[in-house]
Structure formats: C-alpha cells, structure tokens
Length: 485
Image 1 (cartoon, helix red, strand yellow):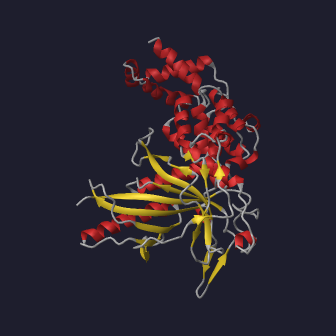
Image 2 (spheres, rainbow, N blue to C red):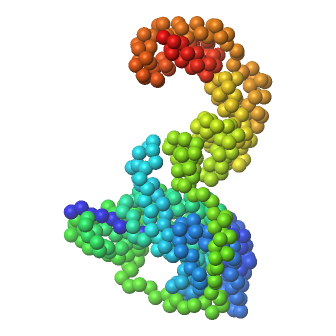
Image 3 (cartoon, helix red, strand yellow):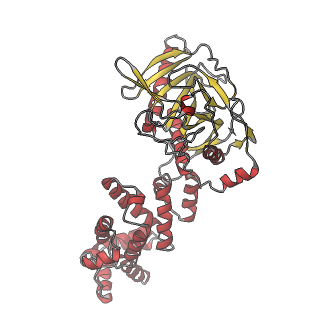
C-alpha cells in the first residue's frame, strides 16, 4: 500500500527585544545563570506584569510579513502547569484570542530546476500567538539545575496547518520562515541559542484518504537539518509499523540527530488540561489601523519577492539570485554595487560578490558588514575590467589585495603594474585575421548563425597577444572582420 505523510510544524521564535515581555529586566543569552531575573520573572507575591510594546510590534510585523489577519483585540491567558522551568507555575500566553490568524509561508518546492525559479507553494498557517518563554533545565548525572535567564523572554508560537507532505517540504518551510524573521529584524533565529525551536506533528494515511492518521509529535529537533532527518525517520518508522500489522500510537517521541534514532517520551492518549483562564493582571490589547499601518511601513521586501525582482530588473540568472537574496545584508550590498557600476553590469557585480567576496569572507570569518571591500570597490573593479584597463586574471589578483587592504582597485592596479598594455590596432587586426584564416570550421559555423563560434577565434588572438589584449576590443575586431566576409 502507498502512504502519504501529513506534517504540521509548531515553531517557537524568540523575539529580539532588549527587555522581557512583561518586565523591564534585560533579555539575552550567555549571561551567568539566574542573573536576568526579577520579582516578575520569578513570580514573587505582589509582582505585577507590564506589557512590552516592542514585543507586540514585532509579532504584528511577523503577522503582516506572513499575510496574517491581525486581530483588532487580543487578550492574555494563564496556561497552568507545574514544572520546574516555570517559576510561577503558569505561563502567560494567548488561548482563544491570538493576535495573528491565518497567513502562509511561501516555499520553493524541492526538485525544482537548478537554473530557473521553480514551482512555489504556500503553506497555510493556523495562528501566531505571543507568550513568555520558560527557564532552561540543565541535567547532570545525579541532579538537574534550572536557569531562569530565559524565562519571560518574548516568544512567538507559529502554528502551521497540517499541509506538508515530505521532509523536504518541512525543511523548505523552516528555511523560508527563518529568513522572514531575520529579514524583518524580529529574531536572529539561532537554533543553538534556542532562539528558534521546532516540534513536528507527523501522521501517515493511505494515498487518497482524506482523514488524518494518528499523530506523533517529534521533539528536540535542534537544527533545520535534524528537522528534515527526524521527519523522514518518523515517516519511515510509521510505515514500517503499519506494514508489520501494528498500530500507530499517539505519543511524543525524542529524536537524536546524531544517531538518527528516536524513542518514546510519553503517550498522549488524553489531552492535558491546562485550565486556561484570562490573566487578571493584564488588559486586552486593541490593535487599531494606525498601529498596523506604522508597522507595515517598516516591513521589508521578502526573499522570494526580492528574487523575482532581481530576475526581472537586473536580468540575473537564477543561480546568482538564489545566493544573494537569502542574506538581506548581502542583497542590499549587491544592489548598491550594481547601481554604482552602471547599466548592464549587474551580472558581473553579482559574480564578483557570490564567488570572490563570499570566498574571502568565509576564509576570514567575517560578515559583509565587517569587510573592507565596500560596494564602491566592486563597482570600480567591474568598470576597470569592462573598459579593458584591467584584464580578468589581473582583476582576480587585485580583488585579493583589495579585500586585505581596503585600497581602491585602480590604486592597486597602478601600484602593482597590473593595467593591461595598450594594443596596437593594426597588430590586433592581424592577429584576428590569422585566427580566422586558420579555423575554417568555426568560420562556417559563425556564418551559419552560430554566434558562440566566435569564441574559437578569441583563444588564438589572446595567445598571440600574450594575454594582454582587451577582450572587448578583440570581440569588436573579430565581429567587424567576420561581418565583411
């Protein structure tokens, strides 16, 4: 029997704010344990929560970026449970009136062609709500210690519909969602720091069946790759159980990404009763049109929209846009350099950035913002090559020194004697005539309409010129001579 998987993801994203969601104590990572606390975080008697407006701004922005309906009124609820990571024995969350409803995450379907923008799909969302994060348990050999530094950090829970069917789709969903949050400045989404955490709900059913199968929740997926691997493992496990005549049990399972195995944590035969009720210390929030309009004006262009624009406006190949658009700083860097370089030079700019700049940044372990090479350097180098002042091989040398020193490419070319020597026009024409005369096959192909056949003549010309000829002049001279034949 053929089976179809049905996958839904619950993603928790820590919002990047200076203070916590219901108190002014600082939010952060890497501090000494239990130093980012105060009476509100610890739930001491008489301590009252106060709403952090920056957290509300961020979740409204997230909702607008993902096309959600922003609720005109949302309220706060207490989710009651007893566990050491929650010092108050309840979590302030949103139950029946979340701030964001609906929306979708755009993904590019796996298996799309490598050189063109492939088929896209929108994964619908159920809701996004705001809540406070809990503390972190650190387990030792004989005891467990709790660090409340994370408790009270503003946290979004983004819940998808069960609308994905493969592990690769889930991977694409998380990649796109993470990029959206980073583009919007909402979160850094560093999974190693717990800023993005994901649980996957997976079931299988016979192909053609409409009812959902028994759901298994997969936890502790601490990298996007482990999400993909864990889901693929769970789908295979569930199919194996059914093919052996067994029954899928509703449960929560722990996935170990290092070993590629999972084990049962607990059964979920009955839903836990969290006894939600409205928080008596926090008033409902009214989100008016003016508030939404202010946040909407701050929303950036998203990666796929930027990619579509780069393809149309700059005529870039898909392979370049696929590198540029997923890093907002890199995409902005490219656009500035392309505008400085001038019309028709965007692809050359993109090639220098995606090949040479990223290679040097990786070797130096620097970000785009930290590089000495600025967009103006790239634009100037492209112009030097395009005008024939510097040849491509020399430009490669110039780039390495430019990255190390921050000097302008023209200065380096002058200092190191890397400018191309002027070519005598008569001598260049003779080299071109000789190249044409010795390659009758390429001449026939060019005359038959095969434009690329002209490249067969360029090699011999550059060899005769000892690599010093201006490629643009070589092309122009060859075309003039060929047109007259």
